[in-house]
Length: 140
Image (cartoon, rainbow, N blue to C red; front, side, top):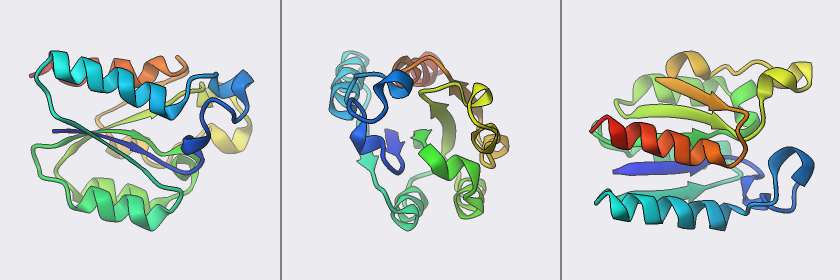
């Protein structure tokens, strides 16, 4: 099972700062990923929360064979609790960011969770979701 987990404010995709995050909605992203997963006979689930604890609770319930595409949003820049959770679970986690965080404001340039993820994809707009999903699918 592949889980697509989105953090704070990602429910606003499509309307939130479209110059940075694009005009594609989270619903549109999920629909595309669902179609790709279906065509590859893969199960996929989607979760979004604006609450750090809910995201951590969700991740802690995953099986060790599960895989995660995680867009942590702003939590990437300060959530040691999320980092500790990722370190503690057995599921593989790929961190994604729609914008290129290395080219953003100084406080957004560092991710505290990158080091405990198996990879990071950043800066390719909504395509980062598909890129992460394809990476997992190609490794099966």
